Length: 237
Image (cartoon, rainbow, N blue to C red; front, side):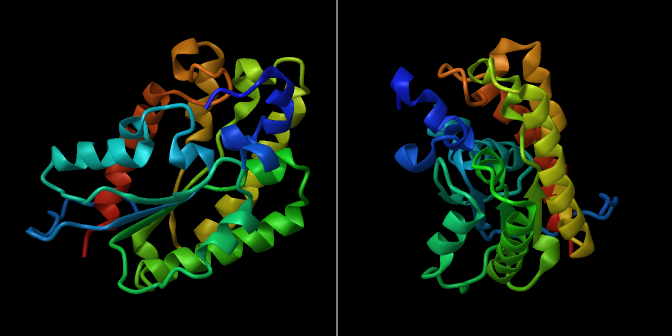
């Protein structure tokens, strides 16, 4: 969706996750079990997960499913619950009426950029992320090994952020990621750092979407490739 210039900063991070109110363990050598059952993936998040400004086929969960299929690990199309502009609270409210059964074979969670952008407190994020991670485990049939958390990407590298205090943005993104990483690791859940990869967009414009404030399908390809070995490990008995 093309965002009018006057709305750019009000939408900034919703659609990076930016779009605020208006825009709204290690892998082992053991083989994976052979099965004819199509696996189910639930992807929870914000604009990064829904793939704002990219084609549906370019979303990172969709690309990961395609890569896994090449290795005979077959998922149905991922079920995505995500919206541009969502904070932890928005995602939590969206999940309240969703039953936790039947269970999913894999659940991924990427959330927090809008908490940072809106100036929400770290305490609020800590509580909100903890609740969402517990809910993700429930969706995975109370199997934490079937849950994967992705870190918050750094939108400070996008052209849209030029003129803002990008050093502060990056610093706060790191602080929020320190929170979600600690909670994730304490729960024994796999964690994938996509923040470092996102920052390479500072020198590679092809990693930025055409709206100048989201990441491109090419960037999501990087994330999907990072996810594949982690998903394979999560599926091991």
